[in-house]
Length: 311
Ligand code: Q46
Ligand code: ZN
Ligand code: ZN
Image 1 (cartoon, rainbow, N blue to C red):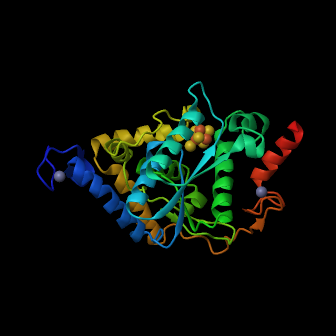
Image 2: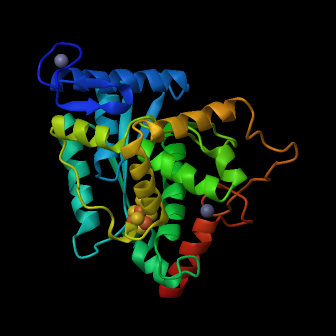
Image 3: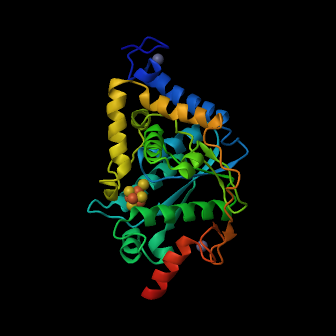
């Protein structure tokens, strides 16, 4: 297989694009495409101050690398979840993020859940009814609260995450199987801030396949944590990813078409919100974040109750 641009040996063949590229041209193509998506979905401009949520995995570190290469002002945010799972998951992922930041002279902000809020994610999941022993719901809630809070308090205008096409298609598949209208309406490459207390969110990698990101990270020599979070085992999205991979193997491009046709249908008004869908948001009295949950937001209720008990 030869590179379509220069005829040298190709390192990747993207059947869905009918495009094979050599290392040099692939490493050029990815940032060019990312820039196209940033503009197409009006994610941000060079004037924005960008906060990249980094987990130590290939996608978020590749995203940080791409934004840096494109000349954006992007700092990293790492949230220490305190997950070990017998593989030192959090410690190793933090090390990868710090290593990347240091190599590229970039600023990494670290928030450690245990030292700032008293508990790790597994501890919170044990205590909280919301977790019922499974940490992902507690973890998602904590990450959303902290990411938005840091972005707001430190003057970032946009928060970006490394979700790739496989992630987005799996979530879309789950939401479609259950026709979850509210989630379908909100799923988008860019989510405008619907309240002064919220920061705009964007997913610049949403049109890249996971294997394209893995190839990019590898070819750029980015050191990332290979292991998935140990709590991801058995998650529904992993099952949806497998189903979609089977479809993709037989019909190259199926995943991308599924996602892009959804975006198109949305643009054409298929998921327009009902006229009276206004959710009242108030500010949490403890952390100031917008909430629909009453005086205290769900995150503060969870950590304050547990924290107060253990102090
Ligand atoms: S980090 Fe957290 Fe994920 Fe681990 S505990 Fe679940 S939600 S699986 S992206
Ligand atoms: Zn080439
Ligand atoms: Zn709060």
